[in-house]
Amino acid sequence: MHTVVFAPDSFKGTIGAADVAAALAAGWGSVRPDDRVVLRPMADGGEGTVDAFAAAIDGVVRVPVRVTGPDGRPTDAAWLRLPATTDAPQGTGVVELASTSGIELLGERRVGEDAHTLGFGQAIAAALDAGVSRLVLGIGSSASTDGGVGMLTALGARFLDASGAPIADGARGLAEVASVDLTGLRALPPGGVLVLSDVTNPLLGSLGAAAVFGPQKGLADEVIARADAGLARLAALLPADPAMPGAGAAGGTGFGLLVWGARLVAGSAEVGELVGLPEALAAASALGPTVVITGEGAFDGQSGAGKVPSYVASVAADARVPALLVAGRIDADADTSAFAAHAALTDLAGSGEAAMQDPARWLHAAGAELARALD
Figure 1: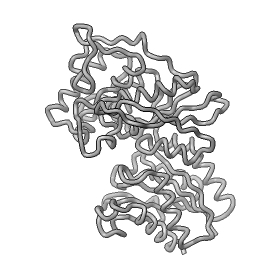
Figure 2: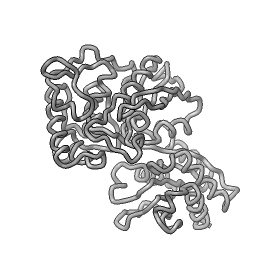
Figure 3: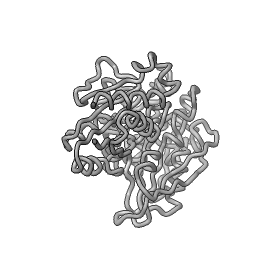
Figure 4: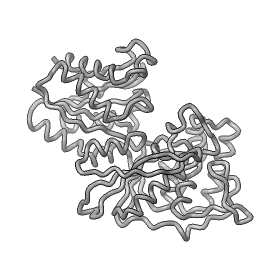
């Protein structure tokens, strides 16, 4: 009998981390029904961050909130209130950009320069209004390149053009910004603001928010140059360093949060600590043979740079526990040496399209395959 800890990320845009963990566990249990199962769904600050906390921590309260989505349409989201602790006597608020201002909210549409982060700021404001002692913010999966201006506007900042009027939403408005008024910006909660991100890019230049992430958000080449110039214009007016690692995260929302006084940290590691993954592995291994299964939608050459599977593999190595990997696809150039075994849904289903049409089915199959490999 083994203890099996399931700690996957979401398979982006396809299935959430909690459902990934459940499907893998069901598949594993179909082959090894006597094994003890521990679910610790993970996230790196992007899509699924709120769900990962909700699944792993007892006593959380999901608080619904209606916000303005990245395209200006109303969208229903939620933030989490974690139970009170010594460090956060009024609880911790967890707010996710992906569910308030994220690119998945747009489906196949892209609104380019007009996408904004106003809804993310509105959800943060709702958590502050509820009196939380600290905030944990996940900022992956952004739809916009507005430098966090929408978010800061919702928190009381004012961004004005040369005539003193508010600038337009999104990256488009950055070309007009002539002055910034931060006097109305809301104070940080007493316990501060922790920002989860797996991105270390600066705000500006060839490695910056517009150049690296703009194309996936629908920005054409000439628009990318304009957006980068707008971000530079914004940075010159604000008291934060645009060269800081992570300033370019979420279309520059990382920079906006630095302006507010937040602290940026590696998303996977912080989520792992907050949901108790190291403790779960230590407790399981003390009881006897243990394995941990992690995964993500696409395991490729970038997956070793702070993504969930690399973090879980490192924790497993520290605990001397074998790590197994499941991914939607595993690229030929990906380094899987940290894992004792791995399975790709595309191989099991026969194609990427088939795997994406019914991910739970093929995750179940992957769990069963890995369980048989352990035998």
